[in-house]
Amino acid sequence: MVHQNRKINLLSGVTHNMQSLNLKTGYLCNNDCLFCAQADNKPLGNPPVEKLMEEISNASNYCEKIVFTGGEPTVRKDLPLLIKHAKSLGYKTLQLQSNVRKLSSYDYCCELIAAGINEFAPSLHGHNSELHDLHTERKDSFNETVMALSNLSKLDQYVITNTVITKLNYKYLPQISELLISLNVAQVQFAFVHAVGNGELNIDSITPKITDILPSLFSALTIAIDNDVKCMAESIPPCLMKEFRSYCSEPFMPSTEVRDTHYVDPNFENTRIHKLKLKPEKCRQCLLFKTCEGPWIEYISKYGDGELKPINRQ
Image (cartoon, rainbow, N blue to C red; front, side, top):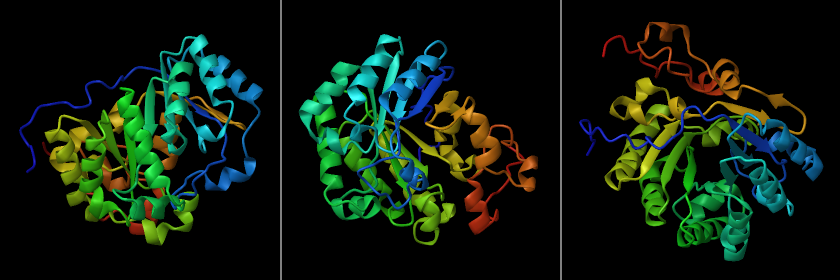
């Protein structure tokens, strides 16, 4: 059942004005996901810890949040040291964006929490080992991820999950939602696949049409809503989200600076809107034009803009 009249804003806890540092800790990873956007960068490896310490310090005067991402941050043995450094500089929110396979160790979870991580952003792409491991191309990655989520639940941690929507898993989004809720996560997000890196290589086999995924996505969101779990959908134009339009994630994304081993993007929001996504000319007549970012450019290149339906009245 679709809750057209429900006024609950399950995104009310999201901070709008917090400046965030997205720190790329390197590109090495213990998964090899079919959609990995960073796959082309893996030969760059991981930078020395001193370089990352410097980047953390450089942004500490104006960023309140830091997101440790990659690649996979947990493959670095010095990750706790980086976290402690960020905490000592006054970052209020310290998020780990990870496949969390290494967090299947309860002791390692405790070590990261003691270092300062207070928000976990794990990824799960299937409701069983067959489907999740198909995406990660690593055996037992599902079992390790679920064990990690169980550990974080026992430790009463704030967990916001991300599931990449692909042609392989979109029919099972409701089951994924149910599994995540059973593991006591605080928030679930479903993000439409971005066809770059491995995603570009596998675009035909993993990129569905957006209109095909909507029934399952709406069911998955409804399950979260009915269980009072925060939820959102990313990279899906609001004209297609219908009565779930308020669950689009883009309006709630903080201003973000990306620091990498070889570049700094001081305004990733601007990059995302103007370089990575595309609003076709016909969208200029839409009432949502100013707030919509449009789909990924690669999606328009593959499927065109026929699915987009400009809204010219409320």
